[in-house]
Length: 152
Image 1 (spheres, rainbow, N blue to C red):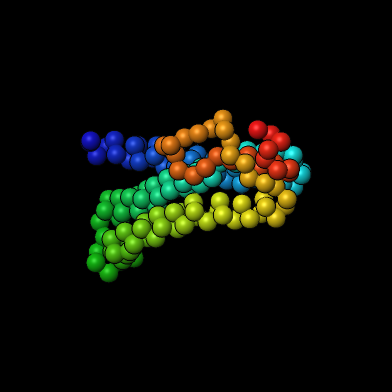
Image 2 (tube, rainbow, N blue to C red):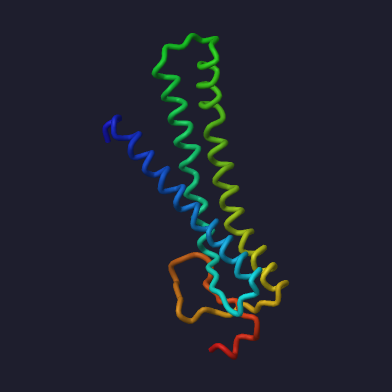
């Protein structure tokens, strides 16, 4: 790929990552409003939180643009821009790996916290028989106020 097309592709991935991260946040807000309004039944998919992993493109894009800015300007070895380039070079990989690990932890912990919150509010988890997938991570369930046998 030509170097002139790389920033455009990276920016597109970054925009898609922002959109992908908005979906689990939307689900958090929707389920919170369902619980607060005391809905009788609502659907829940715990696998959507893995879309947070796509946000790894955000620091990658930031480091790319910061490094590109520093490289495009002539810098002397003692200048602030040169120190910034060295810090990006030295700590950028660690920041990206830590960001990735935090996203994976969030993707596994948030569904557990949600399940606890739903059960504490008096909901029962029932398998959603309409959605059976052996490909996606997580499980699709329906939370209901009464035991599951009445619905299936």
